[in-house]
Image 1 (tube, rainbow, N blue to C red):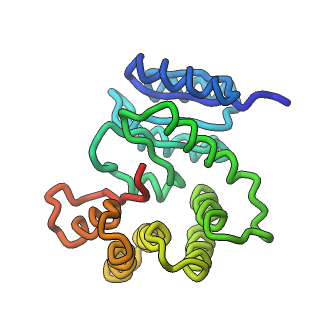
Image 2 (cartoon, one colour):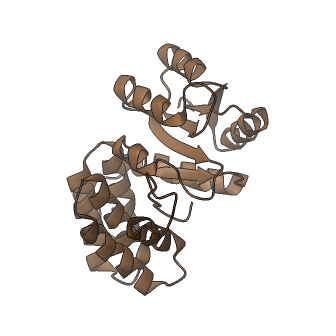
Length: 226
């Protein structure tokens, strides 16, 4: 079987090296790029399965690179990397099909775990999907394919199976925001997540952002603990 191919795009050499070594441990053949322009050049020559993109780079930033990848290479799955305490421009990223995020500094174990989830969800049989974890991963797969209605439907099924877990409510709120629903619809789900787990930080941040309590309000949706 051919190795999976990954592209790591980050302007920090140490980050590129760490990610490359970690991905090699789980069977990936990895290429790297220090700029968005270099990444696009590599994408034109090689069919990658996965790309890991830094949000902030000199020149072309991660969002613009994500947009270009989705236009020209829609089958490439994308994980966004951020060094900041909250995920900047995540609403734009999610609209472009990116739902997976890693916050620097991250450990090799965290990288392996998330990459494993991203690749494993590709083989989920939608017609036979059942169980809370599988439905959440299927919803994220649908987001990557711009199928937001289907993503919302799968999350609602997950809630019906286990209404005691905050992640599904938080993800549903994010999907509603991306779809342009009234903020009250998203807030209802974020509040539901926080009522289930008062320590669930993503929901709290989303509530603060919508309520205007965060002065850096624009463009941030927190999807999960990563």
